[in-house]
Image (cartoon, rainbow, N blue to C red; front, top):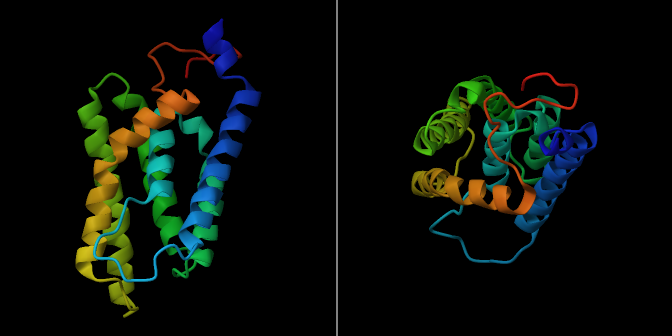
Length: 182
């Protein structure tokens, strides 16, 4: 019975609001001028990590329209080409959502590798599109450090989301509030 209560429509919408709220908070922190010198190392992209963690663990918490809106807002606020990172992230999160059911019974290392490949795909796709249209880009070393740090931070995000928000993998045979298998 506890499993059914955990998947109530209220819980789903609460987690969607939590995802949007955390993403907006991260965007606010990224806009603050906390460091005035250029950096040699880029930290992980927290919004992509959160999106991919939720997409692999509980796909119903991050529908494509919320991911698209959050990432589009990020594109606009962070002066990236509007819709480029949003489109790539929506494509990757939907690909992960399609694979989430098959990853349920596999070890965490396979999930981590899948998320890492999606992270690399989004970020390399972003750089390729920028290069095709000859748009100025961040230095390659900075972009690579962000890709690697984002992929390496995935287990931390999984642990944090499980401990703080109760976001875990869907168990085989688990049902929703109506008794349908998830």
